[in-house]
Image (cartoon, rainbow, N blue to C red; front, side, top):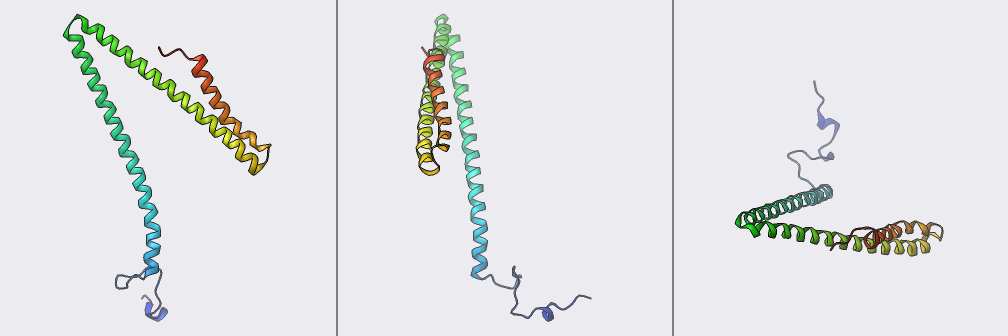
Length: 156
């Protein structure tokens, strides 16, 4: 036989979670909002990121398809078409190479700026010995610039 819960807890004694017949007070609604808002925010961010990546991949796939289709039509059109298709491929490769080199240049400059900023900030906050940690990203940036200007093949 189960004990009578009303004898143990009077009618004004409410538990943490209300029953179906009880109403939620404002404190319980606030605690529920404190839990749900971060969950919804996190799910929204990851859903948005996933959808944007999927759309970007679909766009790249579509561009590759149209490029392949255009090259096929050019090569089938005439004897000059094969030469034009090869020239178009070379031009695309050259543009990709230039874009990649420019990206490495910008990345190197950003790393140098971040490293020097870390050296200055850490010197003020933690002292001169720990400030040398900022040289790590700065030297990575220098290595990127050395590669682009001296070691990589020219883009032309």
